[in-house]
Image (tube, rainbow, N blue to C red; front, side):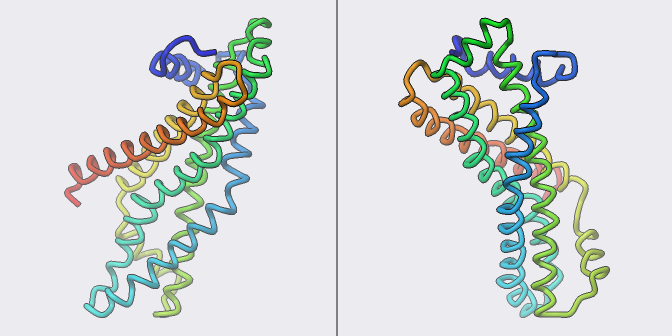
Amino acid sequence: MIAYGFLPFSAYVISDFIFFHRNRSISVDVLVRQVRFTGVEALGLVVLIAMLIGALIIVQGYPLLAAIGQGNWIYDILISTIVRDLGPFIVCFIVLARSGTAITTELGNMVVSKEIDALVAMGVSPISYLVAPRVLGMVISLILLMSYFVACGIFGGYLVSNAFQSIPVSTFFAKLVSELHWFDIVIMLLKVALSGLFISLIASYHGLTVNRAITEVPQRNIKAVGRGLISICLIHVSLTLLYVIITGR
């Protein structure tokens, strides 16, 4: 289906993405369904993992830090793990494994069943109609999921911390906010937004490069997941290095 490379394809999609409100070929229904599937239906899994990670950080870290008289470091560890580093990576990986593969499979099946050709015959751009709303939906969904992950991870940490030391809610969150820097939030949002962009672009590209055989779909899925994971790692490592360079932390 796609007669050109990944970079021209990405440029085409991003141009549609930027001028979303002007392009009548873009389907709002596809956007809503993508947000529902990626950002709403995955919410339970993300909340569960976030609370478990927040709890594990307290269970494993607090006794060790308290033993050396540095119990307050647990707040910095919570921020570093849940907000800045591990949290965004876990959320992006869940979305890649769940929604990235779904996009590749759906678009690949549409190519095989001639639905893409039908759109072209009707004068509708498949990239504008199918890909651009998925890209936007993926970015929106990842930001929403990351917000829930942070809230639930910190809440899980707070619940477990009370088993070691009874801390009022106001005191816990006041200490946490005092350790939180605005640049932590910026890095977190950049990580999930850029990862969402690349996951959806890679998944869509590989879905549309299926030729005519249904047996190509699993092969394209494997390639999409592999390259999507590489892109996530590169984005997260690059932004973490940028954070270290700018803040010196």
